[in-house]
Structures are given as C-alpha cells and as structure tokens.
Amino acid sequence: MYNADVVIVGAGPVGCVLANKLSTELNLSCLIIDKRNHIAGNCYDEKNKKGVLYHKYGPHYLRFKNNKIFEYLSNFTEWIPGDYIVKSSIDKKLYPFPINLDTIENFFNVKFKSKNEAIKFINKKKVKIKNPKNSEDFILSKLGYEIYEKFYKNYTIKQWGISPKKLSSNIAGRVPIRFNRNPYYVNEKLKFMPKKGFTKMFEKMISNKKISLSLNTDFFKIRKKIKYNKFLIYTGAPDKFFNYRYGKLNWRSLDFKFKTFKKKYIQKSVQYNYPNDYKFTRKVEIKHVTKQNTPYTVISKEYPKSKGDPYYPIINNENLIKFNKYKKLIDEIENQNIFFEGRLAQYKYFNTDEVIERALNLYKKIKKIKVNIKN
Ligand code: UDP
Image 1: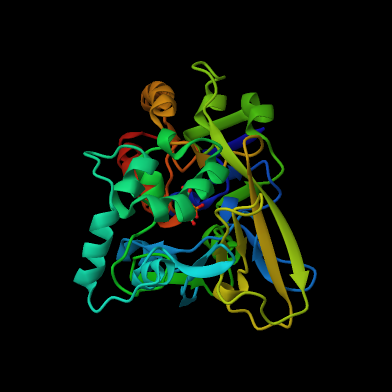
Image 2 (image 1 turned 60 degrees about the vertical axis):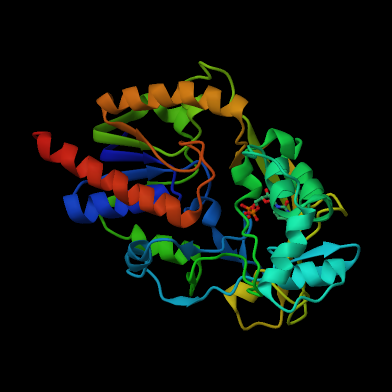
C-alpha cells in the first residue's frame, strides 16, 4: 500500500516544496513517488565519472522575480552568482544573445553614438504589424526581417518542429530585446545558482522524517494502491491522468548528448546557440555557471524531438483549447482534495522560480482547507 496523509506524484520542485511545507508546518506525513530514479525533476544535476557536475535535463538558469522565493530557497542552500551569458553562432561568428546594442552593431556593421540612434535604425527595419499574436510576427514587429531570419526563425523551427507563425508570441518573447549593452541572458537582478547544485538543495528540502520517498514508482501502475488520508498532489501531465478523455496534449521533448573533455574550458560562455547549423539547437558548458574547480569539463548538445518525456508544452491556440477542457476537470477534482501543479500539470511554460512560487501558493490554499478538515 502507498499510504500517507499526503501523496505527492512527482519529486520535482513542486513536489519537494509541498512535502517540505506540509510536513514541517502542518506535521502531515507525506509520500513522494516518482517514476525516475532520482528527485529534483528536470532540475536534477549530478557529478559524472570525472566528478563534473552537470545538468542532466538541460541548463537551469535560476533567477527570481520575487525576493520571497529566493529567501525561501536560501533555507536549503548557499548561493553562487548566476552570470548566465549566451552567444548565438551566425555564419560561424558569435554574437551576444539576447539581441543587444553590440549584436546589432556587429551584425549590421554599424556603430551607434547613442541608444536613440540604434532605436531609429531598428525602427526602419521593423515590420508594421498591429497586435502581433504569434512568434514570427512578434519578432518581425520588434526587429525586422534580417534578425528574425538569422537568429530566430530556424532556431524556433528546430526547437518546436512547427512554424513560428503557429506559436504564441510569448515563446520568442521570453528572450529580452535590449537597446543597451547588458550581456546577461535574463533581466532579473536576483540570479543565483545553488552552490552545491539543485539536487543537494532539494534533498535538504525533503529531509524531514515525516517525508518518505518512493523512486522508480510509476503512479499509473500503482494508482489503485494509493491511499491518501487528506490530499493528493499531482505534478504530471493532465491528459494521462484523465485517460486522454479529450485526446493527447502536445509536448516537445529533448535528447541530450554529453561529452567530457580534459580541459579547463571549451567555450567562452555557458551557452552557444546554433539557429541555422546542425540538428542540435545549443551547446551548453554548464561549468561556466556551476563554477566548479576541476580539470575536466562537459559539453551537452540538445536535440529537440516530438516523442519522449514531456519537457515543453507547445503553446498555441489549438493546444490551449484542448488544455482548457482538461483545466475544467482539474478545477472540479479539487473537490476530492486532488491538486494539479507545475509545468506539466498546468501545461504552462513556467520557469523554476515560478513553479516554486506556485507551490508555495498552493500550500497556503491547502492549509486553509486543512483547518476545516476534522481529523
Ligand atoms: N529563441 C530563438 N533563438 C535563440 C534562442 C531562443 O529563436 O537563439 C526562441 C525560440 O523560439 C525559443 C524561445 O526563444 O524556444 C525561448 O528561448 P529560451 O532560451 O527561453 O528557451 P529555454 O531555455 O526555455 O529552452
């Protein structure tokens, strides 16, 4: 039997945060199950045979929109600064990415005396599109054809397997566009990496004795054996939970190819994007952000694919209509004290800090319900 006050499906950030709060603050027994052989979900990092810490499911550049989330995580880890610098490789030349003044100057071979001059230059390139709703129109309306064609178009097609015209503007819109020389990948001022890695941070988060963990355990194989006294928290894909009642949701998945080198560093910065060359989208040398002191380094290449574990929801109208049907079921099932949270369960392109914030908010909601449940 899989029995506890709270059963949590998925040992990723959402599952770990809720287990932590429910066990330490409400003294509830929590059982976390996960079909993988490790905790931390896609934030999982580990040391390879040569002792190099690497991100198994792609780079996680942790940053915080909300200071409170940073404070909460600080209970479980020390930090190192998160200096995430990305370059885009266009015609064999590396450019700063996100697009900034240096990118525009180098790409068009111009030199601006002021920010305004650069804005005027780009204004002439912009395509006039009222209310851009998809990723192609969004970038064309902000930066014009040349930059769109070289930096965005093919990267997006490779990453998502569909035309940027069929993707919400929020997807390409995730990456800032700058008329200054800020080289960092994200805009947030609070950007830090857990000093010993994500896995260690989440291990500490779930170290309370009231929490038990069952790895290599597929929810769908043991579903009937689960008994939760109070709550079930589900962080997986909703379509599977509801037996695909409204059909399959579309997801994008990735393959990673890792290679270890006996070299201090291979790249100049953590990430090189390859919009127009190769089958992979980007090469990541995570050591630039883990800042590990070791004679070895690991490079990972990311190959997008449509089959495999769900990594990214594909946000467009068609998929959102389908998800919204599932969303109704998700809202209804709260009556049975079953809660859906996280990137998969909510079918939203959340960042790590955002899912942690959502998990903390869900905790507050559950706490109110708990007060009303008599033992
Ligand atoms: N993107 C692009 N060119 C790039 C990097 C990103 O066109 O060099 C677009 C692409 O559509 C991508 C989206 O911006 O899916 C978001 O990129 P981000 O780096 O935030 O993706 P993640 O790190 O979440 O995979």
